[in-house]
Image (tube, rainbow, N blue to C red; front, side, top):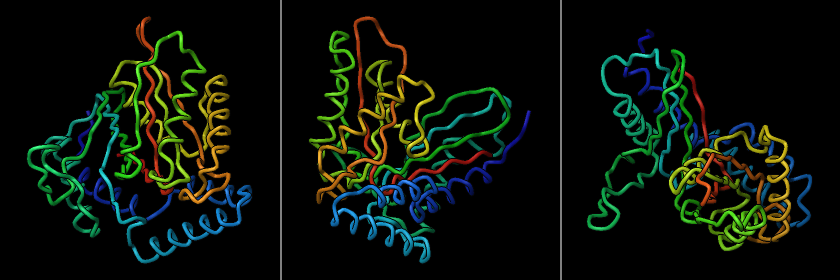
Length: 281
C-alpha cells in the first residue's frame, strides 16, 4: 500500500489550476499552428494570431488567458493500493483549488446555490469531482477548466435508437450552430453517446480532456469525428464568430453501452483556450 500525503495532493492541484489558466497546452498550440495554415479567411487568420499573442503574454506575465477562469472539473483515477494520509481526497482537491485561485489571482466564479442564494463562495470551491477506483498505486488526475460561455452551450438529448447515426450527427451540428460565437471558437467539441442521462454528459465532458485532435482508437468512431469536424467547419462561424473555416479544432466522441430503448447523446463544448491539465501523483 502506497501512502500519499494530503498536502502533496493540495500542492499539485494548486499548481494545476494556475498552470491551466496561464498556459495553453502543447496540443492546443499545435492546433493553432495548423489552423493558421488552413484558415481561408484573412480576418479569421488575424483573430487566430491575436489569440496566440494573448497566450504568449499570459504565459510570460503569469496572467489568466481569459477573464473567466472557470469552474474546476476533475476526473480522478484513484489506485486501489493508495492510502491518503492526513485527510480526504475531496478535501485535498478543494483545498488545492482554494489555494490556486487565491495565489494565482484567478476570478472566483462559484455560487453557493443555483437559485435561492447565489452568494459567491469566494474561493471557487467546491470543485466538480468524478472519481474512479482503478488498479495500481498512483493517483491520475485530469482537470478541465469550464468557462460559463462554453458550458452554457452544452446540450443533451435522449434520441430514439431509430434516429441512428444521422440523428446523432444532426444533433451535434445543430448544437454547435445554435451556440454560434458564444463558446468562443475555435472550439473542441466533446460528444458522449450512450450510457444513460448523466453518463452521456459525463463522457462528453471527459472527451474534452483527450489531447486536441487525437482521434478515437476505434476507426469507425474516428471516421465519425472527422465527418463531424468537416461539417462543423463548413458552418462558417469561424474564430470568435467572425467568419472563417476554423470553427472547431477537433471533435472528440466517446461511447458507452446503453439500454436497448435509448440513444442518449450529449455535447459539451470547450473554448478556444481548451484549458486542461493532467498529472500522475
